[in-house]
Length: 204
Ligand SMILES: [Zn+2]
Image (tube, rainbow, N blue to C red; front, side, top):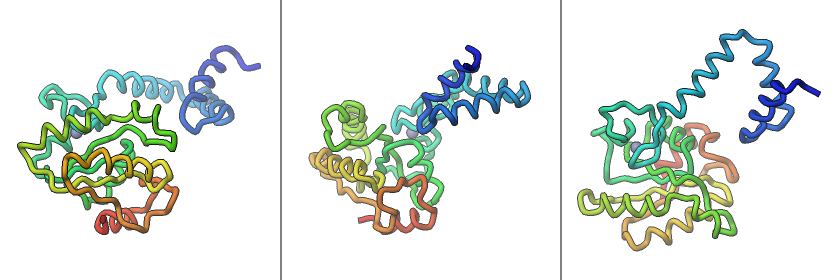
């Protein structure tokens, strides 16, 4: 039986996504053996996370809050971005993956998840109300010419895109999907840049 302090940290790491008890104990013993400085840096980074990171008022992209930014992330504040394009992604890492391609210059909206096959309880976790509000807000000022449904090529991602197509119908803005070529069942964040670039360019 490990000591209480060790067990406590293993327990904390075990709650991380995709981390089982074995990996959790490896992390813990890594920290135990490493310099005290490493553990302190980790503590500081964790402390800062909730202290500094805010979700963007428009797209929900997390960013380090600075007083002059008024709650918007750097992407949303960037005047050079095309405000007539909106790309809906499931999560933060998908936004990052698309940004890395340097092929998309519009705005984003992070939906916060997917619609599973059973739908009902999943829906409440998505930012659908917020999405509707954004579309109503930007509608009269800027004409949206395209909404890209950049969900992952997984079963849940497909179901989500279909759901969004229906959900967005009343706004009469053309919606597109990423082009073919993305590995089925994969996630945007693991797709290589070239594939993602051509999926963006080949959207339909
Ligand atoms: Zn933003």
